Amino acid sequence: MRKLERTYSGTERIVARARFSAWAFLREVFIAAVLGALIAVLWVFGDDIEGGLDPNFTGEAKYLSPENLRWALLGAGVFVVILAVMHAISLYMQEIIVTEDKFLFRSGVGSTVNVMLPLGEIRYIDVRQNAIQLLLGYGKIKVITDGEEPFVIYNLVRPERFARRIMRQCSEVRENGPRLRLVPQSTRRR
Image 1 (cartoon, one colour):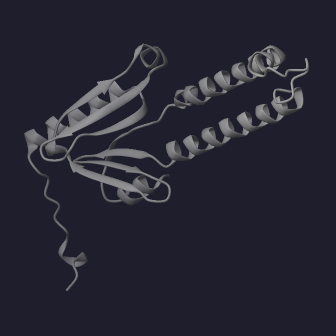
Image 2: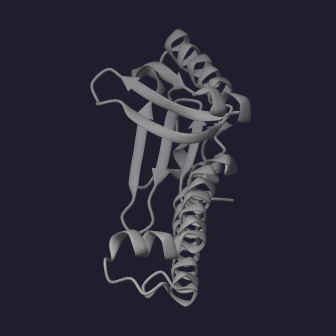
């Protein structure tokens, strides 16, 4: 159980939880493919490239040697792994839940962003997916409220379904009005 769920599950009913998609790591796969392809091209055509740039070329690559390109390939691999780990941590540290009357979003590793919106303030939710995201079933939502600046949440699994659940709960809150919670007399502080 995550932090928001631990905090609110004992006092309020959680209506919806968002999940984040692992397909968001396509960016790291793309970066790895581009860097790998670039290093492969340099490896294959290193002599020709260095010969075209150096007028005193002796026939053997000095800077684009296989030894140097192995180090470049290792560096690119470490770079992509670090990017993937940082992205995984940031995705893991995001959490969204919807209770009967609130929308709660928490994100961040070192410094956190906590958003708590009354559902009555949410006007609409804009769902955006490109063709690949639509095919893979993930996307982003933009939450538009009365007074606050809209904020965007990326890499949600089935964002249109989650947006419908939020808007259904928003309309229920608007119809029934704010919920009053009465604390029993025995539990009040004196």
